[in-house]
Image (tube, rainbow, N blue to C red; front, side):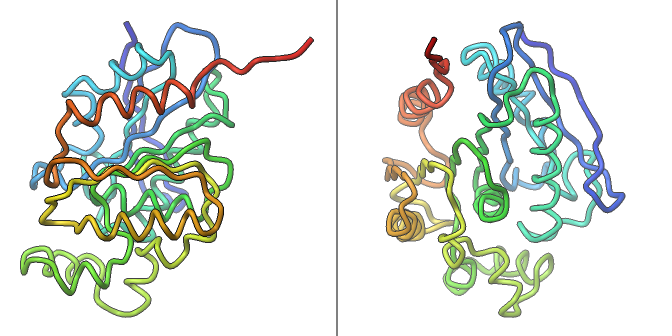
Length: 251
């Protein structure tokens, strides 16, 4: 069974970023990086994926390195939180760079998997980082201004506090407006009845990616913001098994 280790890495500006990883005993293969959501105020960060068994499960079943990063203000990562903004994106980039340097990881076979606010930030990271093998996004918003205008008062206050409401603040957190910079094959999963992030956001983002030639698959599932595992699991299994399939070499 894969053992989980904790790492503290530099964000690139001296700030600390917490990362957990589970490495398989299998030969060099790919990696998957999980980026958590809001966590209901618990601020567990990447440890959430340790506690629920995700890291060990994905690592052992797929034979890959599975990692989880703590966003700024979560876990042991330095804050403050900036609601999916530049410092959060920088922390994810630092985690990806750390994985690329691991001897167990093929740097050309890294998957970025963001959930909820983690999906918002991960989508933006995919506009900046070239060479990702794939991108998986669940329950995200891709036009933050539009989401802000229709969201609950509590969510609006969180955005005001962490990000501000200037045009620039919204733009640097809205991957829909930068979709032409994404190259990674993308899987979008979203609940039809999500009351925090409208399914229309994922549908529009999927269409935008397809228009610029990105291989993309979009699934609207029978659920809300928390997606039913029994629906998600078979989709992920098929997608990731193909993504991480052994590379055939010709002799």
